[in-house]
Amino acid sequence: MAYEANALRYDQMIYRACGKSGLKLPAIALGLWRNFGFDRPLDLSRDILHAAFDSGITHFDLANNYGGPQGAAEQNFGILLKRDFLPYRDELVISSKAGYRMWKGPYGDGGSRKYLISSIDQSLKRMGLDYVDIFYHHKPDRDTPIEESMMALDQIVRSGKALYVGISNYGAEETREAVRILAALGTPCLIHQPSYSMLYRWLETEKVIDAIGDCAIGCICFSPLSMGKLTNKTVNDPVGIDDKVHKRLIQLNEIATDRGQSLAQLSLAWVLRDKRVTTALIGASRIEHIADSVAALNKLDFTPEELKRIDEILA
Ligand code: NDP
Image (cartoon, rainbow, N blue to C red; front, top):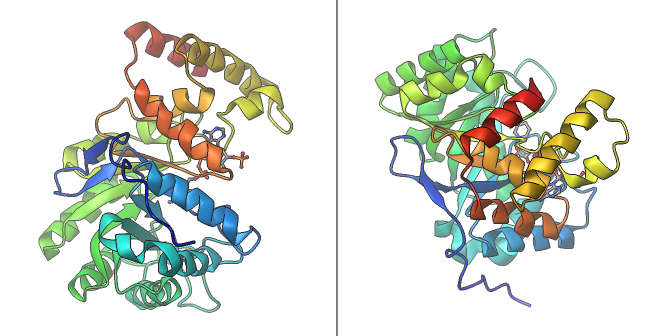
């Protein structure tokens, strides 16, 4: 049956300005890194994407290497886009990235103009798109002058293959430099995509969030549930989890319960508490994950006591 999106999809989501740009992103976005490759039933991927869009998640995040195997997530997404989402293309923000190893030889990874431009061409083909909304340099490449990578991003926008560009996994100083170079080229940096969760606070300790705030760009935080660790599943079944981490999860879950939230909801609200963070970028392996995660938006505020207690648990 043809997919028809939920008519009330925009009622439950919060949309936040992405830095000082005119683009608004949903506070919760869905990434296709895992669970969308050829190793998963396409119907399940389809159901998860429907649940997400029906809940107001307008942003789907991909990369050249998501799978498995590499490229499979973009290929599957292309199939589902053609089947269900083409009528909604203008309601969607679709991103892709290049940076990690994608094909053999010296031009298959990094940050050269050669790699970035070949890679976006391949991604567009796999997804059956004329353009992506956001294209990222996936990680810094210290073997390529940053100017070359940024000039490639600028060229990608000017040639109509992406509307905006961003950077991912860049440190604080690299972020400031990338933003400065892109501004000089006339293609402003839209967004940074770092990892950030209660269990991984590199964004704060390395002052990347300060660079993001000073540069007034957007910030979409990946793995806000620490790849599924910050969930009730791990509280109840800590297989492969360090005892110390498990103890923390139990204590955090007590705070979540007091707030009337699941641990996943507390974790998402916590990432979104900083106004410099635009979006929490989740993954999902089940349809139910979408509704549970989006319901985090019902309670985003924290008391100073709650924040202090969370810091003590994580210290
Ligand atoms: P999360 O930290 O959100 O982990 C997702 C996992 O958490 C799911 O697979 C599921 O695990 C579990 N989960 C999700 N929602 C719930 C819920 N409400 N209740 C209970 N469990 C839940 O994100 P990911 O690490 O998967 O990353 C998200 C996205 O970030 C990626 O798809 C990608 O787009 C991006 N990313 C970017 C990177 C970069 O370098 N730029 C690197 C990594 C990710 P389970 O299946 O075990 O139940």
